[in-house]
Image 1 (tube, rainbow, N blue to C red):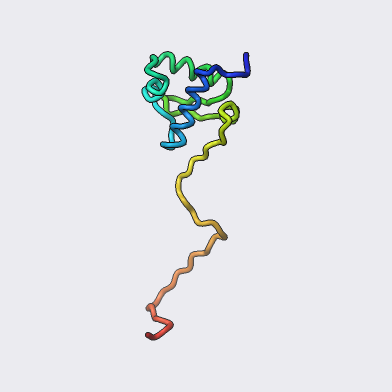
Image 2: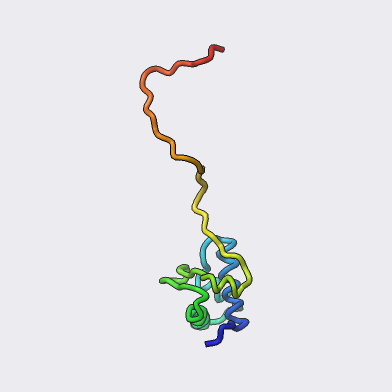
Length: 109
């Protein structure tokens, strides 16, 4: 098996990368087909299978189950994308303390 990918495979891999980078998730078959100029779904499936065989992507069920693997990023010459689910504060864990009673101001204004 050749280690180099075809221009068409690289075009699809680049389209997947761009879509994940801009939208945060992989494109659908229809979006991939449109990006490649209106080819058939079977052409997209064949290209995805070849990318999978070369270990450039991992494919789960459905179109949105595509993950670009390290060799795929290397083939594109791009840095890996990391998903961000939200922001969190870093630091030591803080113990929760229950305070009962009345609230009083420490300073009088």
